[in-house]
Length: 154
Image 1 (cartoon, one colour):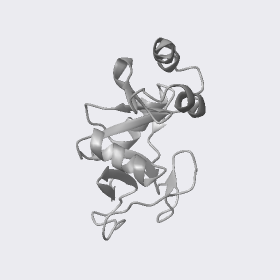
Image 2 (spheres, one colour; image 1 turned 90 degrees about the horizontal axis):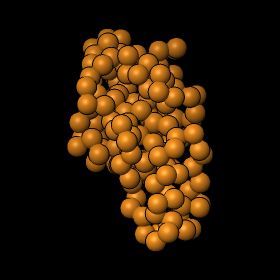
Image 3 (cartoon, helix red, strand yellow; image 1 turned 120 degrees about the vertical axis):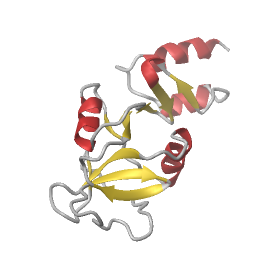
Image 4 (cartoon, helix red, strand yellow; image 1 turned 180 degrees about the vertical axis):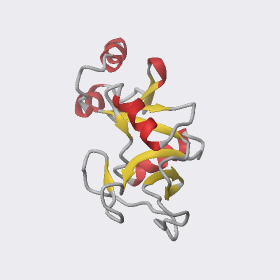
């Protein structure tokens, strides 16, 4: 199929905007996600980086922003299930925090909150738990704990 080579070149060039419509219209036989160089994965018109090391929430976010991305924002159940699957249900930092005002949870980009909190979460059980991990569902944790993380880039 002539479009396959074009897709790989197009997807691997991060400076271009994603056109889901064009991909779905012309490339229906392409797998739902493709591995991209340097650890980035393309899935449903977004690029994801799954870390293999651990850092605090702040250090994880810095890692992402230095690469033109940010910590992942989980927009729907499908994306939550995808993240659980590709991380083998390991704990990862996501881009949700209440560090500005306790109890007011915000995504790193300020977008509306879709909630997949676990039972009895958020709970600030260990004290100052201003950052959020994903592990099947969400839980609040102290930001200085170290976990793997996921960067997301449009």
